[in-house]
Length: 177
Ligand code: XMP
Ligand code: MG
Image (cartoon, rainbow, N blue to C red):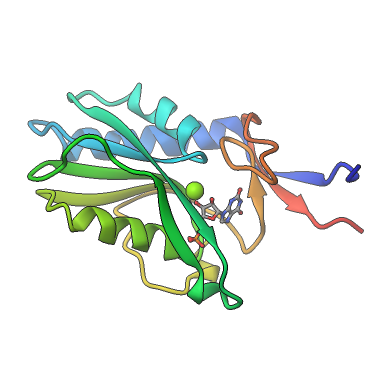
């Protein structure tokens, strides 16, 4: 059995809640009169999506996609695949992608290209966290919650080996030694 890794608190429930309140206020300012489709990227965004949409005051639809990445010795040659695609048509719709974390940017860059080909009326990105120190491709985050340091973070939907998604706070996973 792996020893239990050490976690150190990065963002408290209150800090996460404040960030989500701010994001909701920005969206409530920008989306009235529209009827967007919010597309959550599984699995990491499920908790963020659930808390965020409760605060949104305009009509919206919810969809999810699931991506996987594999292979590639170098990170930037990593192959990304759509494992669970979109069922709803998004042509001519206002689309808002909901992500848990933007790291190298490769995943969301791939997803935005995939969605753009379906000709939405608008395509925006809302991310709970950003790790800008690791970026390999440029990404415009239209709505950003919290910036994280160059560390692996878990909790609030984010996992390490599928564990810790249920934690209500965000933690840095400390390397074992
Ligand atoms: P890229 O590098 O494509 O990666 O922007 C985005 C995806 O990688 C995962 N990821 C993390 N997951 N803690 C996590 O639990 C992290 O610190 C972390 N950094 C990247 C995540 O699935 C994200 O969607
Ligand atoms: Mg993710």
